[in-house]
Amino acid sequence: MNFKKIIKDIFTIAWLKSIPDLKRQPLMLVLLIGLAAIPLFFIVLFGGEEMINTGLIGVIVSSIGFLGISASIQDITWDRYVKLKEMMVAMPVHPLSYAMGLTLGALIFALPGFAAFVGLGIYRGLFDFMSILVVMASMILCWLGLAVIGFTIATYQHKTSPNTLGVLANLLSFLFVFLPPVYYSEKMLTDINGMDLSWIAYILPTTNAAALIRYATEITPWDADAVMLHWLALIGTVIIFSILVVKKARWREP
Image (tube, rainbow, N blue to C red; front, side, top):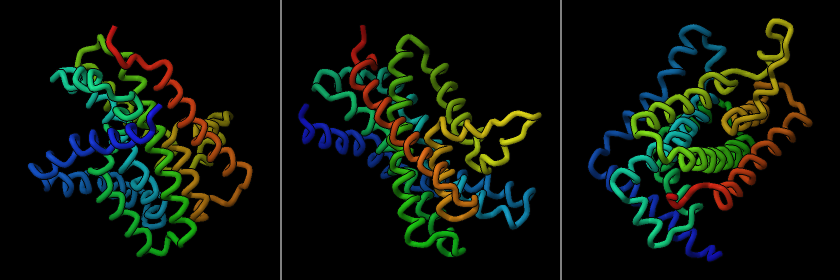
């Protein structure tokens, strides 16, 4: 495995998937920031000012998480339609390069919003130096996890129509970001009709990242065992799905 070529290909694909679009539509960055801020507006509207910090952490995670999972699925679909994927295979490009390149391109679009919301958190006194390090580390792992999950799913849906895959991408983004404990603490799931559903927070990259940031900022009371499990779950997701990308993903069409 030529790691130097893999890394080079990642940045080449990311450039192809982001810079030309940014040059054509630079206002897209402003639009994405505005769309990401909408959930925070409603959280503050209905939850009050005391919910700002919790909602802000959710927005920070979703600013990258929403695009992270959908980019792999939608871009692979589009690339297959315009025959770009076949060109990548013929070059050849390693599947990890393609998967990471696609989502790195989406990450470039997400970074201004991410930076703006982190800056707001710093202004509000939510983050100190150590919590910023946790934000960066957890979101990098979250992005990597979403990249390999989305890529693996997309390669197993090669016979599905582009419209269906587009709906699937949006649905998965919703399921990864809005339903599980990203905008709210997993502690709220400890007693639902007598059931403890807090384990859901350990399943998805987005929920693990959000939980770690809440612990780092002391929004959630410190629990060393839970923090360790969230880190292990996040790292394990990246490792397991990266292996699936290399070994099992249907990269070349049958």
